[in-house]
Image (tube, rainbow, N blue to C red; front, side, top):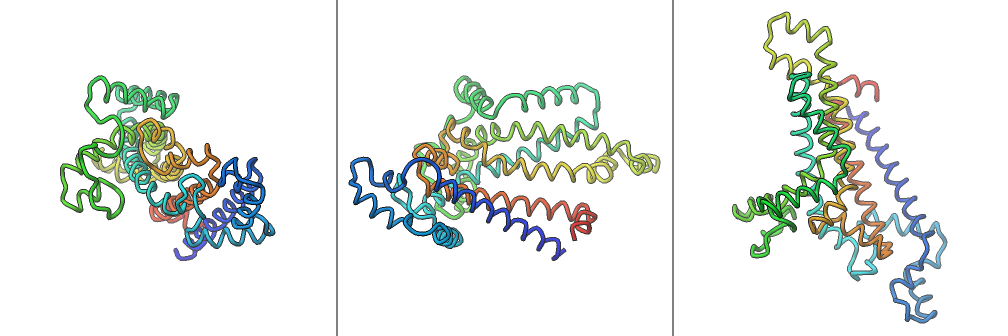
Length: 337
């Protein structure tokens, strides 16, 4: 097991280093002088040159990368050209909101997607399976931002069942900061009304963000479950007199979950990439929206910081998924070792 985890950790480090090299080089070749952007169009050439020296752009490329990677390890990406604050502070302020959104999206995608897939396989070719197939087709065909707009119009505008935007109602004070996740911090502080309000605010954006992945997970789970039902050991379990519930969850689900979990890990990471449109539509003050604004404003330090954080999150989630899969199917761990 230690050898397996060491191999995964080494692979993750290689990915992070590769991403750091690519984003560093990209930040150096895109049009626009960061020093000029930082000082504005009215700055003199002497001021711009002094700023370039201050930012280290007059030094050899290798030395620039060494300074960059040293700062990245210390979570120091320089100052934002737009907010004039350390990028690490901006990321720390926006990441909890995006993390909370991704966690609830991943949770709903996992529970509802896998549950719908199991039910579809159990009632194969019946009305529930057909309805789930239609849902999957619509979920994959329509982008997340379309679902976000539709749910906003129907559930927030027409029926007013759920809040329209933001993380919390304007008349409420955010809970004391512990994790940055409003629902968790409010529960820790015993502020039940604030926790409920934060939960209601996150339902629409989380569900809109998770719908596409949920549709794919449900179809994949259904396909794998149907395949498992046809295996000899499942037929033997039925012949032995075990109940259908025991057959489904003990014998058919476990092998069906392995490919589903692998795809699920990638889907959860993809939520970060898809979050920027959902955060913009629901005015969710998260990291994805901050990253898009940084790209539009050519705030290179902010762009680099956001990409590095997302890369680390990608590696972390994949390591967790690989570890869970290795416990479910030891053959994967043995083959890797």
